[in-house]
Length: 66
Image (cartoon, rainbow, N blue to C red; front, side, top):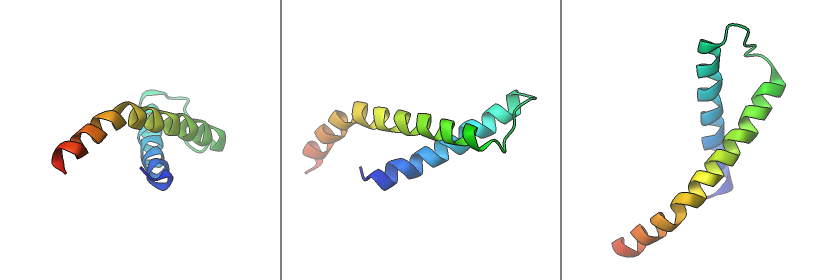
C-alpha cells in the first residue's frame, strides 16, 4: 500500500476519533492543534499495524486469484 494511501486513511480515522471523542467528552476542545497531531500520529500507527497484520492474508488472496 502506498504511503499516501496510509496517510489518507489515517486522516479519516483521525476525523472519526475526534468526532467520537467530542460527543463523549464535554471539556473536549476540537480546535486543539496538538490534539489533532497526536491523534493523527496514533491513527497512522494503527493503520500501519493493521496493514502489516493483514498483509500476509492479502498476499495469500492475491496468489489464489492470480
